Image (cartoon, rainbow over all chains, first blue to last red; front, top):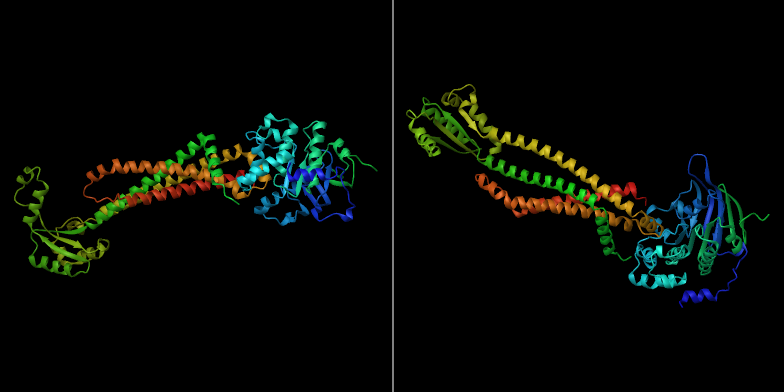
Length: 254
Length: 304
């Protein structure tokens, strides 16, 4: 059993909440942010959100409500039309193109379609993320098996993606996002392709990772999951922030 | 950050294998353009050798008609000898001229036998110090009264005068035209190879788009993402350049010795130093084309 796992298991399963005033330093600060792709229709309009380090946040809304745009803006894949975004201490509007890779090393990403390389095994897929940021063989050989054990894939380290179920593939993708121990984890519809039972497993895994101190942001329209988890919920509708609620549910409560 | 050179090389090699048709096209065009460029450089150096050789042999001959007085010839000879650009002035007698002619037609003595007496004129042979500055001496001759009196009369005042100038001019004209056409061809082929390499790299980028998007997501640095493609461009160009150099060396080994034999009077320089210089030029040009092709492809198709 690794240090990380024992640490995880010592933590009480009940998620903790603290009143907003007591939250720690900011991980994400979004101020007056708007984004227009074409002239008139705004994908996001005047969004203000703050997320403290260590929070677990759902971003909910229908397709086209701006969830994905929001996530991609935090990754600096999309540049806002106006407003200021600060992620993990980087002011994204002033970030030079050449510095974007260093921002992204602080952010883990999980997607609906897993984005695994089909010609690489689970181990190689996770190792790839470390390889391309120049980590040594030694680091790779110790960290990759550890993180794969953490996501519950210790028996399938050398399987190719097509030999794994959807849930297992998503676990590999979570392992890849987390292997570098980023302070922030962004998930865009992580359970979109999975059945409810498997989705629950992935959500629990993400919650475990969150409890190691990793700020976790999940864009989803998986109503059941959001209602079950009872975490902070930010709701977007046609580009507007319509609700920001602790211990929230998917639908409106008031 | 540890730089994983093995990773880059294996990536480039994999792409080399995957797109071998395009790669082959890229290598072939760069090979052709560099071969043409190398040939042009070689021919250029040969022509330079040739002109230098011919220029060094340029002298001026004044043909003297048989009635000219010795006094006039002496005066002109003295005048010319005084000129700073004249090395020697030699009077060739009629007998000497005939003797030279006999030597020239050694193979067929009947030509000389058929001559009635000695029709060959006397001449003044002028060797120059600097053949480039031939004009000063020519002016001196044309302006001299003695030249008018002793020179064989003809349609133009220069009829009694012969020098190698026109040969050199014709040669230089031809060389310049050849050089221009050659440069044009090299330019066009270089452009085509640029397009080919650009296309190969584009395909390589397309084939690896998934990997690239993941590399961007996990924060691989831009240089790290670009390096394999640049390396691939360089690799293609390098192979093309190597082939061109091999062919040129082959030509040098097997064709030039014969050429040198055929044109024995010219001293060509086919030294290893020259070949090395040409080889380095080809590799340098090839690598520049390869890098350029890769950079253009990445600018257009690799959003980082």
